[in-house]
Image 1 (cartoon, rainbow, N blue to C red):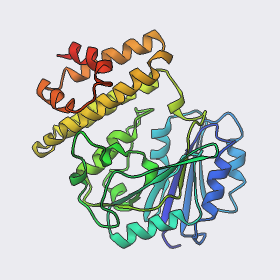
Image 2: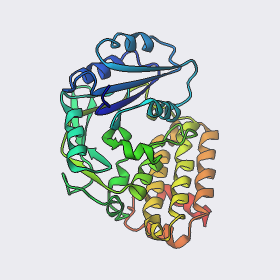
Image 3: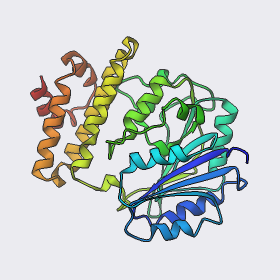
Length: 323
């Protein structure tokens, strides 16, 4: 049997209301049955997610993995990756969907350009409203060096566009271990994952498509929670800082990583802090302080260049404690 052109990885938990739309969109991607492989991990769902998945078993080349208990999105994606056989791999959340032909456009791009991975724009869908989020890269449809698109530290770059489902990735990346997620991370898992791509992959490209539809405000999304799982951005960025220490040339990216970290810290405090319990908020503050203590004050100061008079007072108490 020929190798599938692409494997689509879907990690699903209690997604019976949305995963049908995700799977239906894959039927309309202009692939023959043996060209498209869909691997769905039902990660400990307590609703009828399994029943909805089963409805598509005769319409898609479907591989089903059922976990009796939830093991988390990172572990679920890793299990699906191990089971995948496609020449390329991409990811789709169980509440999102593709416009017809979107995935074919991505596979044509990664094959035609001969790069390790391709990233693309996406549509944020909120009810009847649509908003396009563009990949922060001016050069499109050409092979690029991933390390050339990490800086500058005070502008949005490709490491600020980390969502795994905005890209398609070659089998060669999987073979090098570059598509494995850290299983201990329940949230923010795609931040160090993306940083590693830009530090270690050989080439990438950005293409103009807007056929990926991201459902904003889903009640099943981990972005809708306010407990300690949201604090996983702290160990996530500790792993990023550890990557940068492995190569002297990577140290030039340190202030960008600190800027990333401080921006997420600001978001957690300003947008989510009032909804956190006192215990979680204390864990947030202590974890951030201890992380910043391992960063040089000169690097932190550079990272805060042009940070903004509105945002700086929110994180300043934590930065001061870390000095």
